[in-house]
Image (cartoon, rainbow, N blue to C red):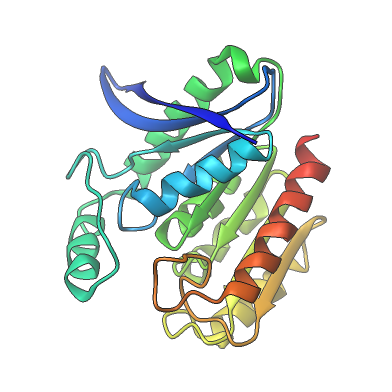
Length: 235
């Protein structure tokens, strides 16, 4: 299935910042998904996620959440890229990012392609943590979080989660110890519709086919689980 893409301007606090919008081939309205980047920006991998969602029938928006420090940054996955991404991430305030995400949801909701349909959020790495915070603060219809390293430190907000939530973690992730995943899983058992999936043999970033840690089997399983989850909760 083909799809269309465009760059959009997202208004927030009297300014605008950029987003990558992927639209299904067939006219809507369709449910929408905000796709939250890793520390590497809205790079080709994140755009490919939005593209795949559009091909699956969703309107996908990937906002440039590093715009306040390095607008338009696109990094790869080498050591120097990781260092740059971490440096920018260190200058980003979560509260500002939540404000920017709220604006992204507002733009997506106002599009004719999504009119009256539900909106979800998904994110990867840092974006996985921000997706979790969005579930706690912004009331998306449902949430998918891939290997969000900071979630374990934010479990105090878990009672505020609104809507179903799905987590994906690699069991060999050196940045997210299994003990942390255990804590998250224990907390999520208190929720009505929260599921934590763990992938044996998978490291951090296992979903990204541009990384050395790419784990095809786990990536395929996680993606299908994500699509099934969206199908159930977004319609």
